[in-house]
Image (cartoon, rainbow, N blue to C red):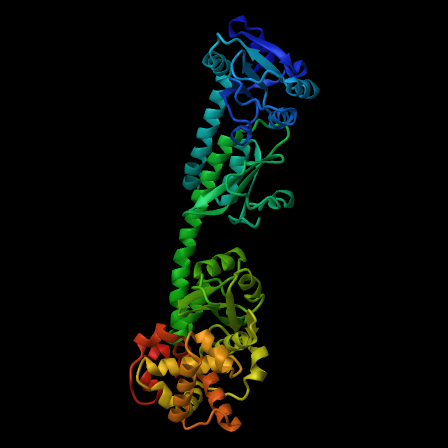
Length: 523
């Protein structure tokens, strides 16, 4: 049986007397703890006897009232102040608030060490401490039992709920499901996530404890008190959070293994080297229903390096069946219904193009071209996502196949493409920025970080190499169409110095670039 404040007062050798708050002497004392903090509540579970030499007791009526209010609200059993040491002479406001809230304020004789009180409380609560220790061991043992019995996450957490005396929920920082089968926090608790760094784990009705995985906060364990149950307290909830972190880490490893296998499958599909029967089996294993249409998306970052892990996490959180591959851009194969829009919308700083729906077991040559066209349209519009059906009408003037696109580029821009590296790349990049800047030379020069005369010289060099006059509408249209085609078949040529090292000289466009940097599969 847990000792009460009244029990401690009846022990003469402890030298304890009541100063205020006599109405709360029936409060049970779970532990005795020394604290000289004005606000120790983030480190308390409730039921503690707080002992202080007086340094924790604030000066000023408002702060004294707030001190009592905090301790009482946290469920502290009482505060014991050592006599004749550091407490302020005037504690009128503190004592009045303690009487109002029936919160015991005790005097402790200066001759009684706090350690004596701590030992009495610990001895009296030995049975309760033993119960908690056994429960904590059972909590950790449940992980071994789950492995031995092959329990799913939901069954494991059902067992932990029975042991802990709490209703348990697991959620991402945004409050969504973290482990399959384990309920996300209710709306009232999800609204409190994510928790600020250093915030108290206490929330209304229980606790919210972080679940750290691989140096990041993967989510939160929310433990809400159950009526009539004896909860294991904050330390027990933290043990359960550790189990949750292990479960999430295991799931992450499984997902990473599946992601790697999926990336290999998508790479082979894009390259067109998989037998149709093998492709169908691979897609079946990845969760695709090959009788239903899929879409192919290409994803690119706007400026900063692409956060492919962030995209992967967003797709996982959306429970969207998918294959993902990083090849300079990020390629995504997913069912057409519901499509990737919602998942990609959760990732900031990206722009994506999505193909028209197609049979996922068939060749990806056409969907890849469609996705690339849609991406270019999204970039032109400044939007975050474009579907091929949106881009199709606007791009109808371009040839429909990769050979014709390469032919158009070679006919108009071939001399610039083959010009001595890296100067040819500088010319193409300068031309691209100039066109995107609505042919405003000064604005384009600022973007490129060069003098306007340098840009003017580069544009005149383009005119010389192409035989086109950029001031003539007919010639400008030829160059602009060719640049649109170049953005589809060889976007690396417009990426500046990052791709210079991959270029080689040769005859024609296809002889000028490594195979994996040119055009589309099948070109």
